[in-house]
Amino acid sequence: MSKYWNELTASLVPYVPGEQPKDQQYIKLNTNENPYPPSPKVLEAIRNATNADLRLYPDPNCDQLREALAGYYRLSKEQAFVGNGSDEILAFAFQAFFSASKTILFPDITYTFYPVYADLYGLNYETIPTDDEFNIDAERFCVPNGGIIIPNPNAPTARFMVVDQLKIILDANPDQVVIVDEAYIDFGGESVVSWVKEYPNLLVVQTLSKSRSLAGLRVGMAFGHPDLIEGLNRVKNSFNSYTLDRLALAGAVAAIKDQSYFEETNRKVIATRERTSEELKRLGFRVIESKANFVFISHERLPASEIFSTLKRRGILVRYFNKPRINEYLRVSIGTDEEMDALVSALTEIVQPS
Ligand code: PMP
Image 1 (tube, rainbow, N blue to C red):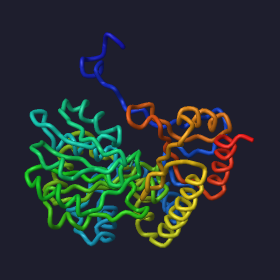
Image 2 (image 1 turned 90 degrees about the vertical axis):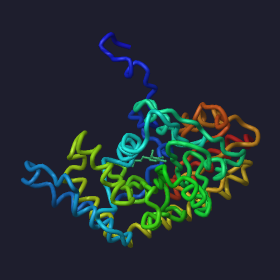
Image 3 (image 1 turned 120 degrees about the horizontal axis):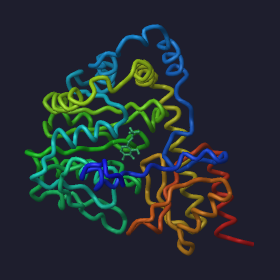
């Protein structure tokens, strides 16, 4: 607290990102990063962009990247937006489409950043509880509101909502923007990006951080009706026109174009997730069905906080949320097969001490 802060700053409760520890080498399964490196073509493109042109500002319209994304999803460039990570795009969307006089809706449990943005922009929000299996009930979003945000798959639960349910929400809310946050969509979920041609109220937000192994490059994208994209551009250009730098743009275009590398790493992550889930169940864990690159687990006997601490002492970092309803769960990112084998053998010793 400082006397120089304004009232808003003093009232903010910021998001706390997962640890990026520097004290020792951990098996790092706490922030849903991809265990595989980015495509070699991405690294080559970034190396090639590391030249004297860095003295020049980047393209504020990010045309080349938006064209690559539009080609990938069979949309027009006017239906695509890019930003410095999907977190930045979500922040722009909250500012562009939601109003202080109306209440926005999102699930409880969900991505912790949504209430943070709402507080930052002075927006009211109401949370709609999931059921005990963490399913989201679409009907409960069919009430008067000022906008909706649904992550699909959800975080940190990994639960995927069948897209027919999203249709119910979109049809019931033609006058509100419905944001579908598809950060984890490439790990077995079904994207609704193509629906932006039918639904002028739909904004789909995605990221290169997870399925393209580029969390460090900070590139996110959004798809929607050109009017929604124009709204995002207005906010962006009133904030910082150059949110993506030249290296990020070059790397992102290469990532989108290397489809076969993307498919191969995703296949590996999904196979490892399925195998690990079965092993965790055998150790007495409840594993919420996952369509993401992480699993949400709780043990029948041992408290999650205790498992978290013991794993950390053994050099394995997972995510523990000390929050109501989920404080018996751990979120575990899917690593390489070797990393998951190390996790399973550590957990075997923790839950079945000899
Ligand atoms: N949405 C969800 C649901 C997430 O879990 C994350 C990652 N923490 C993001 C968006 C943001 O991802 P990024 O800013 O790296 O694109």
